[in-house]
Image (cartoon, rainbow over all chains, first blue to last red; front, side, top):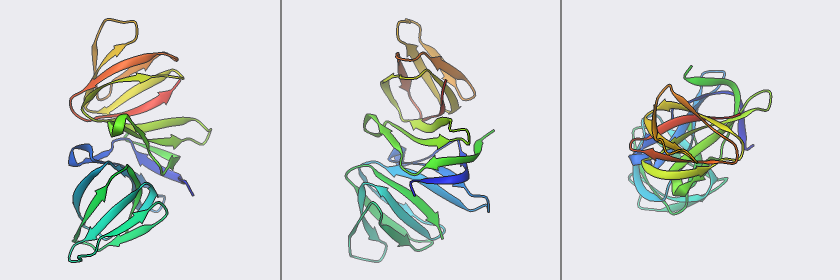
Length: 103
Length: 103
């Protein structure tokens, strides 16, 4: 499914890391929120509040979760889970399009 | 109105100018499309196919339309119209959040 249907979308974007990460918030009928976004080529560290599931839509990324020495690559169609109140390092060499689900 | 309701939103973004402009496409019930996007600090030249109305949501921009020597500044809440098959130069010094309406 390449799109979300019957949703609301906020007109103003979320801009992080000087624009290296830009997303728009999508709100579902039940009040649930997700974001659709892009991370531009960079190496960034994100902190999480709520647990997140990052779903790759296009491009790929390399992920290192806090407390884990392993670096894993995730491509379009693949997802990774990040615990709440944690962080992850992400390295992107081509624009990584994602949907962020808050668990 | 800070959001669009009862719409579809495409998960994959549109990335232009190496990410200096990123937008997501929103589709309305009647098939009409708009984009919600951000232009990062830069000076860019956009070419139009269909005529466009650019509506500022946050930030500001300076616009020079093709064939016009005048440079005008547009802020949040203001819009400017661009003819079809034309172009415009845009200069942005802070992230410019916009909705692009295709006329």
